[in-house]
Image (cartoon, rainbow, N blue to C red):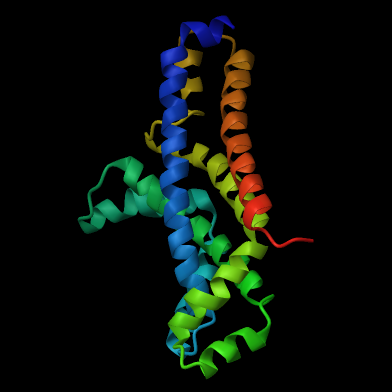
Length: 214
């Protein structure tokens, strides 16, 4: 307990940093994921191509490389933002590709007749997707979305290597101060466990309330 009690403020700062990264990047990933899923099933060919390229490139790019591209590459083109914002962009865009595929699989479970019935009532593609298809698709993919966001929370540890305040990065300071590396990582693991269990609990509640009965 001495490692934790002596450095509670440091752990708290890192924990808060990881929570902020997770929340902001999750919101960005969900928005972009919904958008890219819409593009992938759109009747416009250019939208489908854009969505496919987005998913293919990001899913097959190592996250560390994406961090290098965003945090070190974008400033060279004149885009200068706080490193935490760049980390959110990298995490959110990367995770959006997986959210997109999860949603697309959910869209494929919605009977074709649902969309046809909506179009027969004069609804546009956007209205059909937003009002009929996506709400039903989301109900069926709540658990995998939760798992994807849990992975995002753990992936946020990479941000510490780029001068972003987060939980894993606290080990550097504590190691320099001479604290036991084993107990340092034990309390870091406890912090990540609290975050991931909170996400799991949230999506368990959402599944119980909105999920498809099985």
